[in-house]
Image: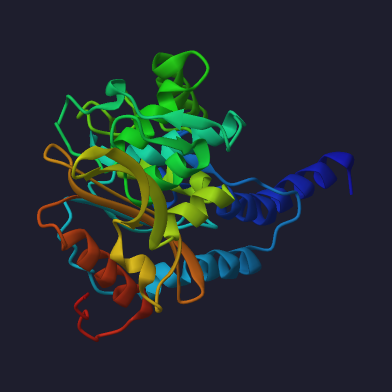
Amino acid sequence: MTRYMKNLLVLLASLFFVAPFAQAECQKVPVTDRLDFGVKTGLQEYDCPKATDPIADKIKRLDSEALAHSVKSNPNLRSSMALIVNEQTGEIIYAKNAEARTSIASITKLMMAMVTLDAHLPPDQKITITTDDIDHVKNTRSRLGIGTTLTRRELLRLALMSSENRAASALARNYPGGTPAFVATMNAKAAQLGMMSTHFVDSNGLHSANQSTAEDLARMVRTAHTYPLITEFTTTYSYDLQMPFYKRVRHAAARLMLRNVAFHNTNKLVKEEDWQIGVSKTGYISEAGHCLVMQVTIAKQAFIIVLLDSDGKYTRIYDAMRVKRWLEGSSKPAKRLG
């Protein structure tokens, strides 16, 4: 056999055997099938190892998508925008207007908490609530009166658990460079996480210009779950804090005293025994509607749930319960919360 014939046979063999294997291995999938927790790049392409087993590769791919294929029905969520993502793989289980940009209200406070913790400032440093922390955007009330002094750690807990706006404002104000530097760092971290459709203008989410998408918020929740204090503070149901007050006494000057004040989590699901929640944050302003983001474990798998722009006060909670039953494959009706 001549050298030419040998080369021709090698070429034919590569066309019939190698090429089909490479084509099956290197197929591209749309970004909507899987959430890239880094920077969005449009289409993702699988690597092409030199030695491939197309049958084993197909089994592995089908196994990773087993949950998505096993969920047949629609969860019928009432929130205008929603996203359910497998936290480990980035696989999108359900999406509804997930790329729509919207106001996110106090969901903003998750980014506020990460920036605060990244700065490694003294957690026991005393910070006083001042008139600069009063909300002049929505004129919301606060249980933290002017002159209240708490540690940075206590303010962070109240901002995350009870969504205290003055606490979030005070934390930003006491950041090196003040609130402008704090907000700039929030936006820089958002860009670092690949949150390309996100913008912040304050630390508490009261301004409607704090905007993002469900996809971007999933990235933020996934990162927030790596901070132990955020996990602890967002999943604690109640916290008692001793706060000063002046008690008036007849024919005497008012006396400064202490009283216990109970703060509660804005998400009632954190106290439910059948929920395993790693991160939780609610939000509401009129432009954003009622919002809820969570990292949860359901059916022994970790998920990120994003629910935005719900109409009623409890719609986001019942949407979360619908998601849980849907992923568990349960037909039981949602129980009512106390």
